Image (tube, rainbow, N blue to C red):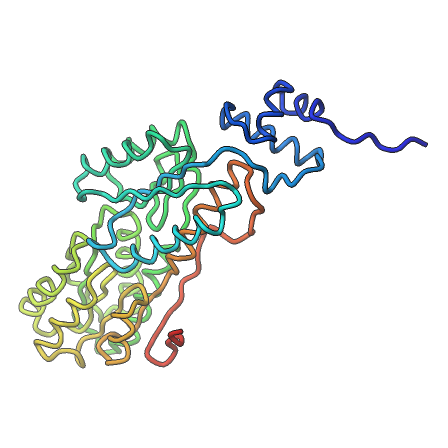
Length: 345
């Protein structure tokens, strides 16, 4: 009997369909190899069980462009998301990944598309949080033809993106509808929805599912309007005051985006905190305090911190770097009320 021959670089080159020199450059991290060939070499080397730490192999730096709203201009969700990307940068350091975050200058379609295209110029992959608009989808589609793109929080299903990471927004809307219907009670009443931008597919899905549950299960609850904050947290107080003036018997508010503090300020100023049910998203220092004070009734949380790390991991998986965690792309939804708030460490 003869001992099994140990795989060689030549075997890897043959399996990957590349030259000996290409395999050597990849395994020694010398660069000068296309991303597609690099991925093929690493895949072949792992399949043949080449005797090296391939999950830690010193390959060229992988540049991930992350395009999203600025935490300063939007909700605490984006601050948590940025923190998650910072953690991903540190956690995946041995995989030689660079997370470059670019913020939108404003939310006008031309501007959003321009920032997305600019951020992709020196990138190997992209993670994007953006709304649906022909100009935005077209920009992402062009980028997706030359690199992997992951959409986060709100999907762009017709963009050619590789994957979507985030919650099931329809499920979130249904949960919010169930909570609202139960809290308002049999007598029902008028309810409004405060969206950020309904062009965000995630916001549209939450709104539609929320309405569907109330219409089907709690018909006494009448959703009289959906108003948009345009992701401006400062506008929600004005929107809430306007709604109370127009609908003096308002019984419920579903704020599916930013600005819980503005909604709360309007309810307090009009002495309607006890008569009006408020359901929102994201457990933050503000929403936690509002739950404790009894101003908010429930908060749906989606762990943006985890979403950011998972999105980076998806990109690494495409380039055959690191060990897959096996975590699902769809992140779970947690429901928090005053009595089940987690301890602050």
